[in-house]
Image 1 (cartoon, rainbow, N blue to C red):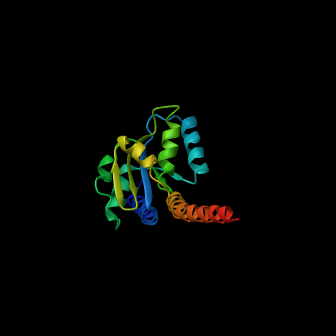
Image 2 (cartoon, helix red, strand yellow):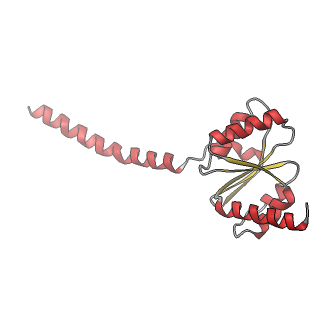
Length: 162
């Protein structure tokens, strides 16, 4: 790869990082072609963009980014893939589900809305993150609950008076 090609690749990664508020880095070493194709399909179904990247280029793109990736560049060893999604826990769910069949991919780290998670031990915590829609639904349910009790009490009161 020439310097010019590397510069273009770094700029391309930098643009992808700028647009992504949810970024996972996974270790995909040990996956054969068939297993990798299955992982790509699972990511596609979950609306996740998966791309295998060169560690040095990704590290340079992270350093050049306006975002603070903290210690994520230090995790870039071995084969790496980035997973970019719109839903915070979607890549974690795909990884966890995929690992029911094998030990890989391993989570190296994640950047989610300015929070950095490092290490495979963070996977369960990342799966538990609720999406924006789930949080809104929970809040609406909590707000509706007292109103439903009041309406039910009033309906019972009117039934008693008849």
